[in-house]
Amino acid sequence: MKDKVKKVINFRFDRYKDIEIKLEKLAAKGLFLEECGAFLWTFRKGEPKSLKYTVTYFSEGSVFNPDITDNQQTYFDYAKAAGWNFVTQFNQMQIFYSEADNPIPFETDEKEKFDNIKRCMRKSFLPSIMIMMLVCVFNLVVQFNSFQLNPIEFLSDPGRLFSAAMILAVVIYEVYFLLDYLIWCKRSERSIAGGGECVENISMVRRIVHIIFMSFFLAGFGYFLYYLVFKISWFGVFLCIIQMPILLIVFRLSINYLKMKKASAAINKVISITVLIIADFVYLAFIVLFTIKLGFNIGADSDYRTVVWPVTATTSHEYRLYRDDIPLTCEALYGDLDYDYYSYEKEINSTLFLTQSNYRQDSLPAKDAPPRLVYDILEPQFKFIYHLAKNHLLEIPQWRDDESYEPIDNKIFGTVEAYQQYYDDTPTGEYILLFEKKIIVLNMEEPPTTKQISIIKEKLRI
Image (tube, rainbow, N blue to C red):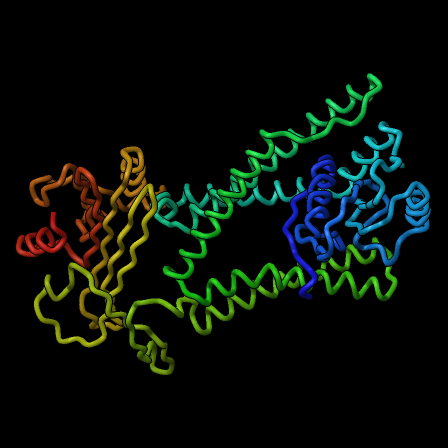
């Protein structure tokens, strides 16, 4: 394999000139095409040569075909007679080379060439792009629904924002792709109608757009790996990285096996895509089961111990008791508590929009369980995020008509605005405290005393 080189090549049917020029430049450097795929192309090392490449399209071509069709073979013989040697194919794309300085072009009918490109685009590329866009739009709708349900969780979660940004970038890029292709079609139609050729789709603007998109995609992917490593686990990175290669290997194995069995292209396509979908579901199910059984945060920094606690007279449940450092504790509020089963948890999520710090002190379920404590500190980076978070916190669903938030004196906590939750006209220990640059959501089992309020202000530095 030392004489082989793999390169990532991004291509499109209407940009055949780009491919031809690139292959000729690589041949001049001693790299000769042997096989092409969706993205990864294989080159053979050798002595540099001056070769001419041509890219043509044949609508019967397909990766699912068991063999080269009779019409394809006739097409190859015609090319051979014109001095062009067949190199490789991918779907409808056929690539030939010639060692002649000025080889005879064997595709001379520009209108037929143009119509052939459009047929090939309609057969494979355009449907796949439309399906991808529909999937991406559906994901964006799901993301938007998640944002509407809880904008605080969404805007403070780097993973969700990253996912939404990447999906949106793909949609924008694919829309640009379609517009660029439609413009090329119109320009080529006018050129051919005037006796000219298909327009060469080589544009500096397109290259700049492609560079910007790839830079954004690679930077986003790098951040995603960083997020997985430092916020979740190395194992999370491993699972994410191997998912696509595993699915591609399964897909290719299915295609090659059915080719070996001489299955028709239609049968091969249906079965292989079905196998790919099933493999994807199986892989996701494996991740879910693994997470349920062993947990996903294998590399998490939080220190914890595991205890088995009786839930009923006959059943027990395993609990994790964390030992995170939290600023305000039940011990500070209620004094020394003779209880060894508290769990102290801290989770901080931060984005360029919002930082959410969640702290909680939980006791195990029991009738005589000691008090619990939960509080969030929100630090919005923009005014509109501040108001969005405030409105969400104060919003009460219609079905919870027995709850309300009533304003309280700002002097109590030194706030700009402050609200206390009421349940059936009875005050509870849940507060929404709004300061100039942050919001604190405090949830206690009962309203705090004057002394406890002083402790809260001291510990949370308000």
